[in-house]
Length: 191
Image (cartoon, rainbow, N blue to C red; front, side, top):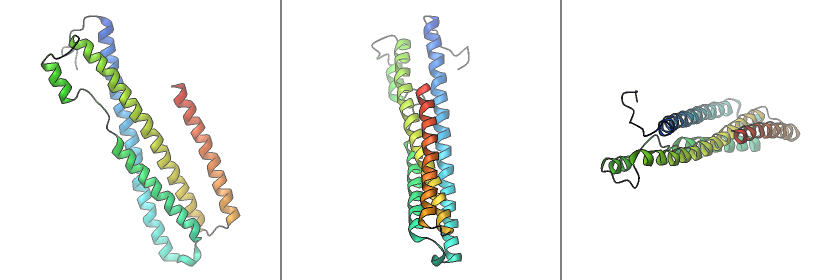
């Protein structure tokens, strides 16, 4: 809205609350779009790597790979795909009033002045969106972790690594994942 389109607020507090609420909704929409984009890119790369892996198996044959590790890699990639698709499909954020609310607003079916009611609605929309942002963020982390695990196990399988080497690789990955999750959790708690 431009300055000429702004509603006339009863006081400065309501005007600022409205403007800040609008900015928060827009920022949440941007965050959700960013999470969706990252999930979709991970899904595309995963599908591409599955195709490359299948081609690699055809070229070198199954005798040159560690089959059990290849199965774990495939399972990790499938989990990554699943989480990525869930992230993309779960994004049902609120970007503003729905038609039913606008209809009530138009008919003046509010228990309070429309300006006050609108500000109350912002609180609910922002809260609902925050839940979506956090949930989708966790799903994206799972998607990307299974992707990294799939790549690592796929490489280990194609290199025909032995059990001890694979175990070392997995322990190292788990350490890195634990550190990354701890950093993310501390950032979320500080916000």
